[in-house]
Image (cartoon, rainbow, N blue to C red; front, top):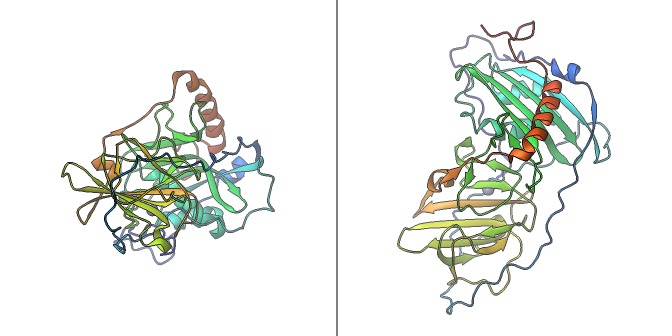
Length: 364
Ligand SMILES: [Zn+2]
């Protein structure tokens, strides 16, 4: 399946406003201007080292193949088409900002503000933050306001540095800012309190990832959670179990493993788009929770390096964020001052809080 946009269209059905209802405004783009900005060191992918050895296992039974039910909706979008300026040097990218009032689908608001070329992929990236706060489009209301600081990149999706969403339904403004803490492999999104935006799975398949790019509840009808991460990231078994399939439906899934939980609990975990698996990894092998069983990759029907992690209970897809315990990490106290500085820098670019400026955005 091609990269599908979440269905963002369920807007006020009763609205008498005719067809084109967008009145999103671009304010920030002017206010923000161009800020030449020194990019952080590129995240060097870990070497695609050998997969951790798995203890020799009993002779495998026949490898189960062609279970082929894993519909793959690659949710890491393809590179942003270039409506952008001529490619800037990777280290020197301009930050831009916009604000948009929601009067219909989220994408319409974003596209109206920044143009179609960058607006479509930018909507997807922005949506990855919004889904931690609310249902999109279900919780969006007319008059909600979105403010974003972002960066266009040649041959890559836009990078979002700040998202602020003022929700009428929840009566508050949600905020997330991208920041690379010293002890983290990747920049992460933080709320101004220092809490991470994303929840983390306890005993999840990865220790580090850049961003969750697809959640079960994000409206894509995609069966797994996609973690954007460098090729070569360690992938761990999420429970004690047995490998029951390897590399089935290769065109879609790429290098892949299916692990069945031991102890009769009936869960199975699917790990797709992995780096090449050693021949020594075979069906029938036992794995322990937390054991490195593979390296993430970009194989099969995948447009960018990521791990697809899917949990099943029998034939039923279940949500890892409900099946696992989850935690919310906070930034280390030593890093909080730096986060605060970055938050205020980005806040300066994003403009004033709604209600604090004149014009049509004031809340009652
Ligand atoms: Zn996926």
